[in-house]
Length: 185
Image (tube, rainbow, N blue to C red; front, side, top):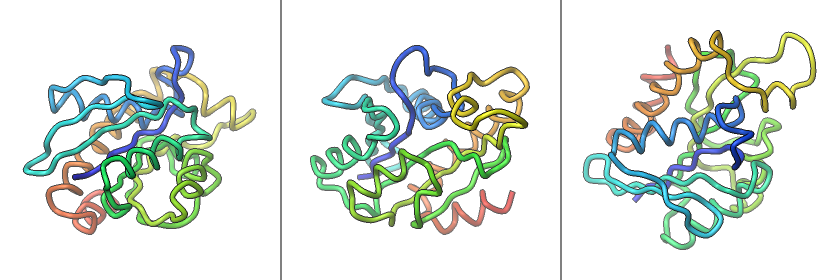
């Protein structure tokens, strides 16, 4: 079993924002599985299979900076190890339209990742980081919570598709093959 956590903020005002790319990728994966999301405790959940592996998709409803609560709960409930966790999130330090698969490390200043590391006591999980680039001007918080405009969508939408493909490759062939395939692009 694998737990795939997409990070974002709940509520209509945060839909289609840069900070909700984790949620957007999970919607893509759920669409491929023909599965919808249902509310469960403090997260939205969808389930299905990729190959022979059962996957649970979760979208924490605790706001970004408390994502660790939901992720920790789900790992405990399903008795799933941290080595079977993939977290998908936005990243300011990667240019828009690029993505990177990474294992372990710190939070890089991302409050959702910081919360997960704190709740799990370890950062040794797989991350799919979707680049949103840095704002040309203004404050970063306003930028990440800003809506994805048409120009950004041209760069970001293909990255959403690649991120969903990367999840499939991680599950079917392992994270090393996925890193070799997707991090070289």
